[in-house]
Length: 198
Image (cartoon, rainbow, N blue to C red; front, side, top):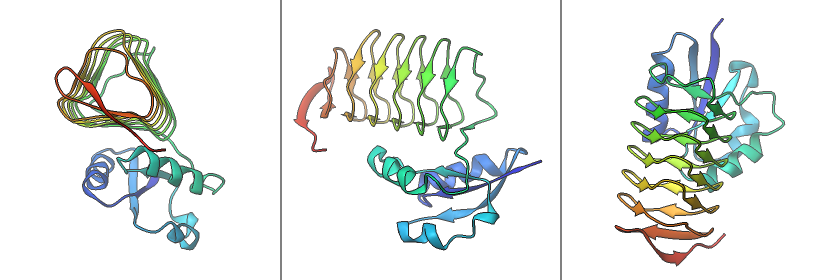
């Protein structure tokens, strides 16, 4: 039996997630939600089983999940059929793993994480809840990424590093040292350019 899934977020990434659903025989696409949280209370919850949050901003995604928690829906993970995960890889509820992702072994991906197209994740990586990895991110082995961290397109994180919570890593950045929480990092090598407001 197919699972019927609604998507919160009708922007570009939402359209990509819809494409994933429509090409996977396990799922049926129910429709989009977008723009206003007030819509949540007016939706007929009998129309879908699950909700996916296709919103790149980790903070907005976390607020939406809080708003939806307690409603009669599930938050199952969506993993593209072309992604082959080893049995030692854990994927938390509500996470979205896009086509072309390569993940090796002993990896933990938290809840409501987005791992976008063609990203690579090395051995023993830990991704906290609500992380967003944009296309073609490369994370080397034994890296820990804190909750709510956003990693821009094409960024690279070298082996064994720790990235704090609520960090923004700019597109193309190469992270060569540990990064504290609540800051923005850009450049090659990556350097902290500002503290982020919570």
